[in-house]
Length: 389
Figure 1: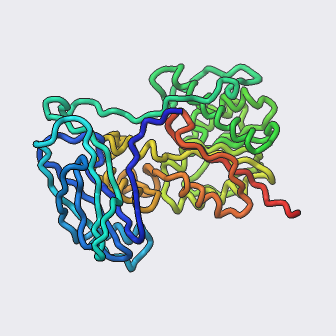
Figure 2: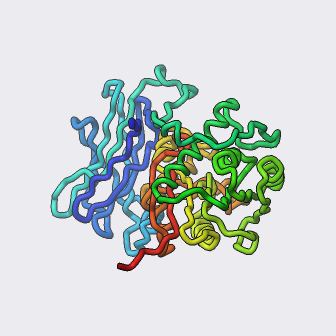
Figure 3: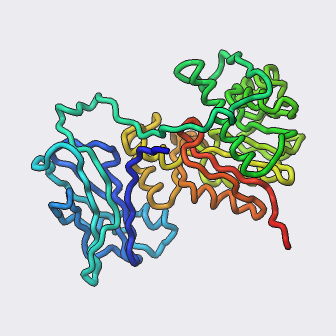
């Protein structure tokens, strides 16, 4: 596997914590550039923060900037909000090419160490004009083809109302097949045989459900979504039981219980409170030994955002979102002020597991970054209590 990601480095020693928030893009233009972030020594700002450029130059930052988001997202109200730092650096003297920025804290004891860093590409404005597409971090691997083999033919009819269209039909079907491969991998890891009852939530217009129908032809399928026309299409095309969801669905909507629940790109669009509500719902809907497979936005999506891919959201809002993600491992950005229940979320794998494992009988069988269509993380748990000796 070859993952081309420039992850933000967090090297914390002792009680120092901190972050280099901005610039969040992978490329900076030579000239005056402002760098900013935060640093804490225990609950207070350290004595100073310096930025080291390409391990050759050091610049003192302005420390003590108000950052109320830091203690809030660290869940430590006693931490000082005046822990922000910023500095404007003239990068004209530095040559174009790789640029390494390290943030170094000086403790009150005088000790120095690096607590954060980031790799950039330094360019001239004539080399990288604003309209130049930014490079997209991506995975360069896939799961073996046998995991996508089906017992029946995959239905090829695509709804004219499909909202998840890809570049072409081949890509559309490849994304659905990728979901089946991830489910099969989780199935193998859990030791489960074929599934008798399957819930696809949200089903959309059957991008994944068509593959589940072909792979598990004897299973009873249930299609659930807020989009009534999508549910109707799945019921008609894939013989699925329709369930018309609500913003806050409860177990009474569902007549069945399921030994597989696939959740493709739902937790990617809701806040932490909705995560907990939905996970509790799926726990109730699973049969004993049932398998739950969920997809989430993880570090790959965060790195794409840092590189300038804002997923249709305002750049300044995405930068604030990334700050929260750096601090707490999870962040949610609402679509617009009038739609607080829907937007985009990013979550580190350990944060995702922490929410799932609030259910004491969930056992982890799979946690893989960017597994679905080389984009979304996939996490799977089985509802299986530990067996006493």
